[in-house]
Amino acid sequence: MPSQMLVPVTTSTPASGTDLALRARRELAALPVGDVATTVAILERMNRLRAFGDQLQRGMESITSLRTSQFLILKAIEEGVVHPRHIGRKVGMDTGAVEITLDALTEKGLTATILDPGGRMVEASITDGGRAVLTQAEAMEFRATDALLQQSRPDEIAELLDLLDRAAAQVGRMMVGDVG
Image 1 (cartoon, rainbow, N blue to C red):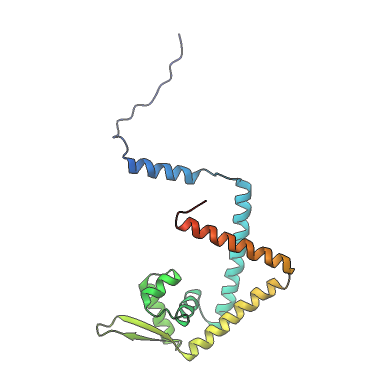
Image 2: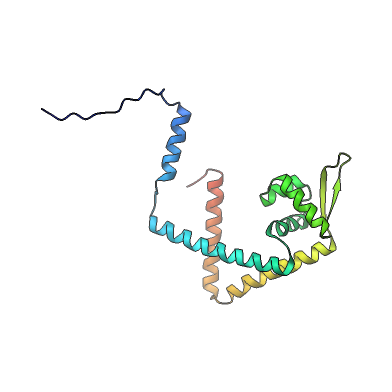
């Protein structure tokens, strides 16, 4: 007698097109499409770079007393972005967090803010003290990067810049869904 295969019977309702599309995207995201070893090697190197960046930020914080979010907000204001909502978009923070950070920066004398008649923050500006601290932090960032580059040959630096440009362009295309 031939063996019979048992197939489980499901009584759930059929999935909608949207549910099927979501399941398909999840499945595609779960399956590696390239060389797994290379992907792991790249992620490990990116994590080492991130760790270096974290060390740099801790050093900058110990010298300037600026947290990363404060540095990014000061930099955005220096570049002309003055409304808390727009600052948040630029630095990847929600408006409430930006306002709290601006309050702390204002208490330190590094920024000044303008409130509307209802008490809502509508504009931020950087003070001379804030500009001095930002300049110090940027100089530290520059010197640390320069120290790394001093250990490389010009052709290695050119290759690194090219790879970073291509990676940034690829990420940009992925963000807008134009992978090709």
